[in-house]
Image (cartoon, rainbow, N blue to C red; front, side):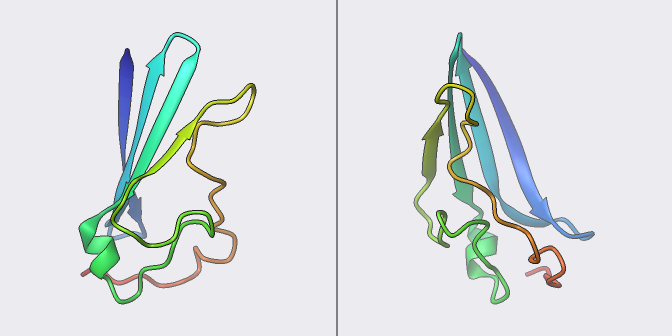
Length: 87
């Protein structure tokens, strides 16, 4: 099984948002996203998706046909313009 881990950060200062882990086993693909503790404590934090509210528990997803294995659609439209300050 192959594994890729992605450190998700926001803004020029690289504020930690969370970690995305993708596990690949042949044609199977499973991913997990967990918000960083620092992001959850940040007063200016916002959820990356309406399907992924701010919470400490991880989000899980699996690849289904041609769909991504990401836990849910990432809805950042308009949010990238928010100024996020480091904690």
